[in-house]
Length: 265
Ligand SMILES: O=C(O)CCC(=O)C(=O)O
Image (cartoon, rainbow, N blue to C red):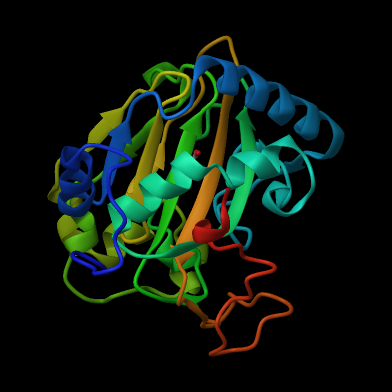
């Protein structure tokens, strides 16, 4: 994991967010998108999901909810690709991590009203066949997401937990709802922080921080876009059950398929 890195561009957000991200493993940044951007990207999310939405899993079939997602929208021409390559969001991610990044994924998600299922407690590393200094998600709210609509909850500081560094995917498959606390029992006793967000806000969290999201008990859909960034130097590191087609073990990710933030205009 990264704490202080030489490549860090700075100035996209106040230093307090960087401190927060590094100390806690996540941070909440208000007004990352303007109201006009929120409306445009929300419409694009609704349209795209209407046309080609698929049921989401946490990764490799673990932890199903009622969430419907676009499929690799970050790669397809269209408005959502613009959001995945949003220069300000990318600049914030690089400032928080302190290193050069590339986009690993980017999709819109809708959690329908009445979906009573929590997202499982997890860290993202368990689902990432990657070796690198960091992977982080920007969870961008395209509607207000109060607690009752299923906002995120984090275990502050859990990215600094002692070994094991990662657990196998089989642990998550066998115990999707408890593997985080079985793998790292001390986290059962750590305080948790639930983070309601307004439309246009984003939370950024890194791959070792424990997190979940709640059910949607509100009358409206929870609409969000999640961009996943990874260290630009990341290499493909397949794990049992975590293989991605078209990638070579040990090789760096390609700039064509996983664009560098530095290329965003
Ligand atoms: O949106 C959710 O319900 C969960 C999102 C999540 O786990 C993530 O962004 O890593």
